[in-house]
Length: 414
Image (tube, rainbow, N blue to C red; front, side, top):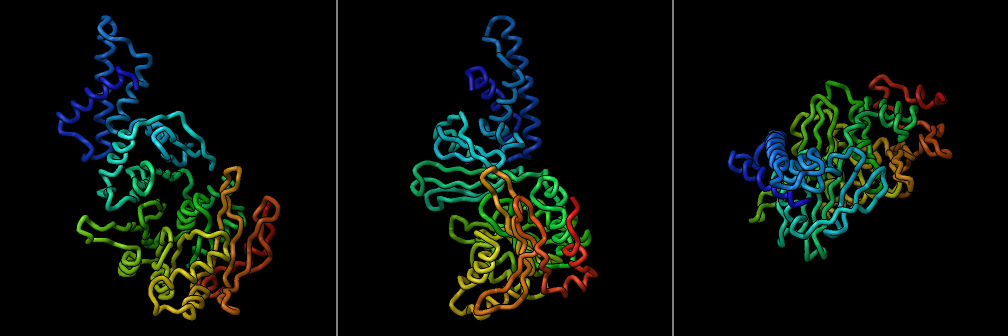
């Protein structure tokens, strides 16, 4: 930031404060006000430059954008937030700021100071009502545009560590995933049929493999009349559904009270007349509450970190044991086998491509403690193709008037 832009930023910030605006106001109106004031100040500065009183600006539009970003946006990070090709931004150190494009990371030329990093974090958290300090050195929050923020501070880390994960609004349904090469047309049609039949879906994969995007696209295939309740640690899902209620967790207050956990939210969701429950990510004991909800007949979907589709079933059979000593694997494993119908594995390859590489159909049977499941779609070379296997559990499909063999029994059109 040049001295001229810094001066203009100070003037605009003063005028915003004098007008009673600020970070507590509505984000869009604050940005509009900052844009108007920045344009006015740049115009005044340009007039002074014509008279030789100040040094002319090299690029008036760029200066105006920098001022708006500094006053109403996130300063030097704003251009990356505005760039639709940037998927994630992270700060390891003030002078090491990275971004990810198309699944690949790159080091930017941006250099910040420690004070600038702290100021940016404070501005990002102010609207969320969440905090980060020595007593709570980690924080997850949602930004105004839906991006997810994670911050870790010393002494847990050497310096302030910041991650901002953006979520693409370009992909909102299964057809777009097919167009992007993440799904085949045949597998997308099978998944759409499974959603309409009320099957319980488990979406799994590594970090950044596209689980949240796929979960949202799957729910776009639900019936228009379905009421969907989403439960997440922080808001990430943006479902293209008419009747949807989104809930997120709440951290404890300074006094240690008021915490709302995923387990509590899943229980509350059952009281909200759900046609479907979607849990953004299952990590711990909330897996038990999800299974109990699915076992009560409420269709649902969730995502889970796992190395493979079969690993996801094993992990989902283990996580409920964290709920307490009175939980027995003899109950959990058959419950997972009975409740989960379809497992979808997502993968991020070295080229940065996100693809579904396997779709399992759970049979409902358990053999020697292992849940039986058959791959109905698997990778054949570079393509996701039907294996010839069909789901063993057909009751939900038949009740909805569907026959999976109509899709799985046909060859995919070229």
